Image 1 (cartoon, chains in turn yellow, green):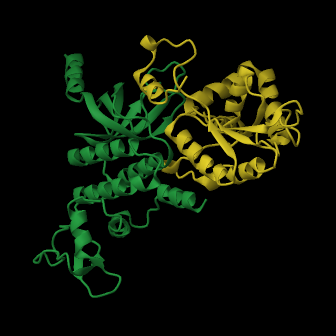
Image 2 (cartoon, rainbow over the protein chains, first blue to last red):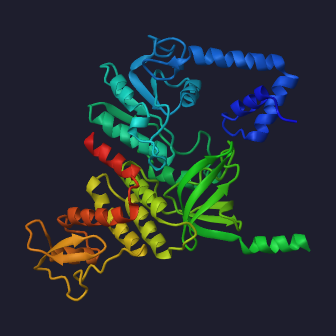
Image 3 (tube, helix red, strand yellow):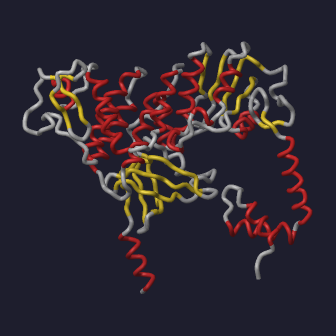
Length: 198
Length: 248
């Protein structure tokens, strides 16, 4: 028996999701059309709605439905502090801590020279414009502590410093409540190298 | 019996605690990664690291580029499977310009080393280069000699090394008072041209002595021309990134 065309299309479409191969896609497709048609309808509708309404915030580049996102339009926040992150999920993680009062900029990626991702492939020019708006005094680089995140931080630091901005990098070291005995040796070694004066 | 046989074959293809560096890694499926590693005795290998992308994975923080590791893996096919990874102390994590230079070195290896070909001497040169980069100060000029000496070791390993002490004809020794023109893959030809390099500097490079900064632009040009022969029309993204950075 050949698979109906529309079912085949659905299976193929589900394969765009990360980590979903032909088998998982087939399982998902059958689940949607056989067991949860309501859920399938909501999924289809949400996809169309998200694609139709979501755009990038004019200021911080994260996803939003308005021209400017809620965080950027919040007058209470510190407009002199700008935190640069790789992805919207990183922004959400920092927001979750409720310990940062400034604004954000989302690069939507990172420099990865070995994957051929260079400065033109992430939102560097937009960040430059954003950081030179006259209000920003300090840029906090919160890219990941992977080698690519570090390379991105270095590139951004050089670029922003050349324009007279103060640049800082989030700290790394032992986790909060971390006991030396249980922490991985690489983290501990780096914490000793990057020790701070008291 | 069959089971025992498979086990024996597995044991034969198992490598334990072997010195290696991760050159690059790619996300694979939802929770795994494919590692491109440079090992001491087995050259470049592709190793499948199952489940390292999971939140609680202990191995993920160990699988860092530019950190000496001891890797254990098994498998007979082209892609091996990671069994264990242990971080080795000694090198601070790279940052800043030395980090970008280390990416450049990795990109060279990814482009020029064939998988499964052992290069133990080059592994030592790689280790030395990464160590020197990790110990660099903020002075951008410190990276130059490190990169040139690694490129020289790489060319030697790939069969494009030159006898830096003799002229291209192989008969006469480089004369420190004479000037020479460089011809990639061939060597140094005596030249009266005003822009030719003095034999004195060539002999310094022959002895891996990079103290004289007058040598640096020459060595860079020689290495660039020689590597271009190996790279063909392949573009080095890290080289472009370093150029972009200079223009800032």
